[in-house]
Length: 220
Image: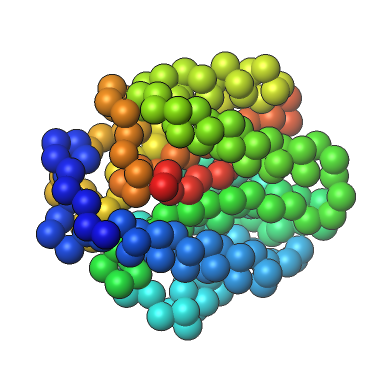
């Protein structure tokens, strides 16, 4: 099914909603495959190198934004910030994967947080990022505007005992490259976001300890 959108939700002539769903599914497959190979003792840079190899093996068209894998305290970093050093993943640690990959001309974008060991607060942090995403996604399905989604996300994060990073407010995707449409951030979009063209991003920080968690997916 093709979709015709305009303004901040404009897409190209090749855009097909089901192709966005296909890209979403393949991106999550890649996230899962990469997570399986990340083990304690591995450097962050080694994880990224292995991740790129896996993406190539899965037959991606190309990467449209750099593969990010963050260990430990680097889970507090935003997309535009560089990691501090090249940390080694610990036996009791936390990490996230964030990738933007083109499949059949359409942009996939997904991210999730994982833990090693059994640290209860790290496990809770990773789970909270996904739970917060689920709550905000449910509100989106009620037809709420983008700005309200992130107001709600901040309130929910606080109620859950976490701090939402509002420097991360979601973004556009479409048939590659979405950047020519200048859609801006989801959290600044005053309309009702349509399906298949927006990524909802959630990044939270632990209120006291130096780590956080990340989760993102396509609203569709």
